[in-house]
Image 1 (cartoon, helix red, strand yellow):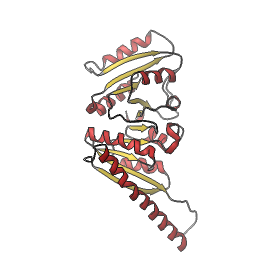
Image 2 (spheres, one colour):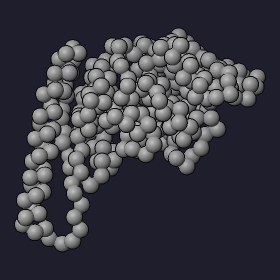
Image 3 (cartoon, helix red, strand yellow):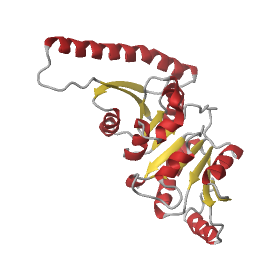
Image 4 (cartoon, helix red, strand yellow):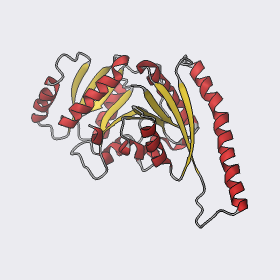
Length: 282
């Protein structure tokens, strides 16, 4: 991993996510590229009148000054958390829409991962209910970690949960999780919620586990219950999970258990960062 893209809206929530991004960059030896996207007012018509041209010039300068003022606090966060040695590049881009600019920048910068926080005080709900972060989770061509506003980083990422229904694409996704998080040497818990209470789930789990023979840091759990959210939240809390990883699908591609809409609902109030591996990159 060489480059991690960190889109930021310069909010306190984004500053929290920045600590996660620094920690990842440090562990995997990657450069961190911060990105702030601002939206210019849309003006319809032909050639801009002189006064409007002046307005755009002042608009750009204002955003440049705001971002320039935001960089020193980011550097302070680096130093305060012992990451002053991590290479960080800061980008400011104006665009018509935030999402295409983030995705295009990820391609241009050849980003191996995107790490981003929630927007302001709206929390993780905003990520999964149509915000730019939610669109990035769905459309990015690299894994994405979304950090909820209420997350508190304790300096360690040693417990990871991975939701699975034991499908082939999830096997590929788990391989990515294992490879990306290897420097952290975490315990990875593969969890499935058995809503139907059938014995076949155990057989599927055994077959899935067999393909990871020799991977000593994997544990497999079948959680019984009638409510997916309750079962998973209970597991996250009892096991002090640092990151919840899962496969994310396009909105029109429904999964039997962990489809995109249920992922949104499940993560509504979570404090745990979500590590999304898009199905279209597997």
